Length: 471
Image (tube, rainbow, N blue to C red; front, side, top):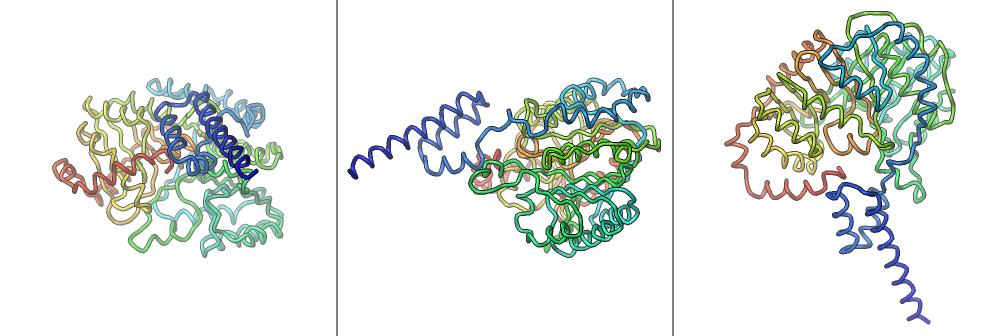
């Protein structure tokens, strides 16, 4: 009997492994991703099954945010924009059309954008807006810690909830996995609506652990919004033990706040099944400047990887310069090749990375891409005073890309992210000044210095590169 059970177990186990391999093959993924999964499942089936269950399932064809619902939320904004007859600069009309056709990203006119380059100034600005809120406060963060910074924000939100202001919070279940449940429960008891986006529950929903909501959004009364790279935690304000935390966040006043509102309400509806709309959430926006921007939320569900496509298109069509700040550089082949081709064509391509990352493994994997970048003529800058967490791309003199997305596989393919594409020369110049100021604190890597680094380091970089899609 025991022998029969053993044969039965082996048969079921083999069928399971072959079944998973068949599923992977029929999903028609990139062969560079399909083949490693097949090899792992054949050589280490137990480990392979666990990793596939956690990280390998392709959920891109599922939709948790319906197009119909998103269109309904966007409709009021589209009607207001249609009357403004916004004219996109000729050199960026195709890019704007790409964002509109893939994600219905509406061009928005006349926003005032204020950048913050440290966590303290951003936090104080956010708290000031919260103190002045009259109708609603919407917050969405990947990390919302229960440390001093988080508690300070919590207390401000509780005070406004007691005044009758609507307060809604979305947090990422993985990003906040270390936060005590009592932290959010206290807010709920005060009338604040708090929900985890894509709640991860073992074992039923464990596959969602690979899909994280990395957005950092705040919208106050529909008139002011915040977007960028800073979460709610002490390290964004105080820095780390080995240096400051250099990040960038933005306050958007005017029509751009409505674009952030659409993203938040879409995620809110997907999470809670509540549909929120009306003039109170989309008030008439004042015109502050002549800039034009598009708010572009992206995610792993659906056919298109919009931020990857848009960044690649912008890089491929650059004529003068491409300046990039990113904490992690783990790019797709398309984007990596586009940057190298641009540098070979004589375009000024600069890539600024942290000299020291918050994750050694990611550091090694990122560095494995730099040999070919330097050979192509890309200027590599290592930021020295602390950890560079800023996400920024400056293209020529009128396009600036800001937001939450890193230049890595996770941001482009697995995470829910949000960026703003800003078409404006004045804002481009301001962000160029910030980039140049950061460059003054960087070490410009010389090719001879880089290519002579220890062989042991090179081997470590090459090994960690294998795991780039999972980082």
